[in-house]
Amino acid sequence: MNTLYIENIKKLIDEIERTQSSIIEQVSQVCAEAIKNDKLLYFFGTGHSHMMCEEPFYRAGGLACVYPILESSLMLHEGGYKSTLMERVEGIGKILLENSGANEGDVLFLISNSGRNPAVIEMAIEAKEKGIITVAITSLKHSKIFSSRHKSGKNLYELTDYVIDNCGIPGDAIVEYKGFSQKVGPTSSIAGILIINTIIATIVEKLLSWGIMPPVFISANTDEGEKFNKHLLEKYRPRIRVL
Image (tube, rainbow, N blue to C red; front, side):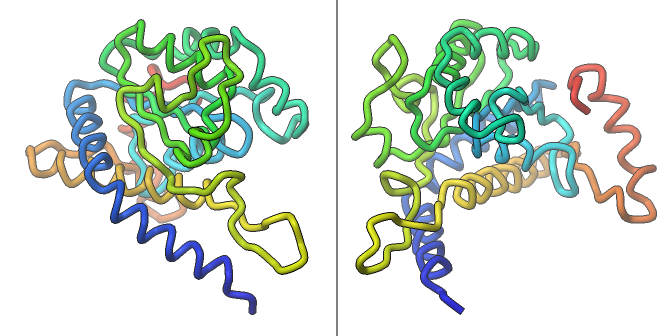
């Protein structure tokens, strides 16, 4: 078995732990306080980044107060190249944020490896105006060498309240072979999911320390799962339309 990708991922995880622990702690604190105040955690990303928005949503060990902003035209299943074009359309971020119902005091995670396309940048700008707390999960190495495609001239990391670096390299893919110009093995998905679940685990720890019962789902594929989750669904479905 070729272990080059695994070896590189181990190094990436070590780098995230070494360099991002402080900001992850800060973001976890902000999120825990938002949940304490009965606010929601929103997640938005386009292309492959939308998978990281589904990751914390309605799953075993996940928080019930998670609202993924999912737009089919920005996902890959309706056309990969189409999604690339759609995320560059100005105006879509504003519409999706407005339709989500996110409001002052909620937390919005904006996930984009490049952080340069209008959909996610526009959402960051609109969210700030609404008093929504914004968190970017992005590659700073990539974002700082490629220019914005938004009319503001700014990339995502320049517009959010908090920035978590996924520590990926420019171009995302990390495995190199001699005599082959393209790299393989992208890292942004694994890094993003690792960061998000670390934040969720830290949020739960903080809520418990405050004497607050965290709203966490258990697996629906256990005998007690559906019964246990019922009260969480009843509480959050009126506010999270995709539940």
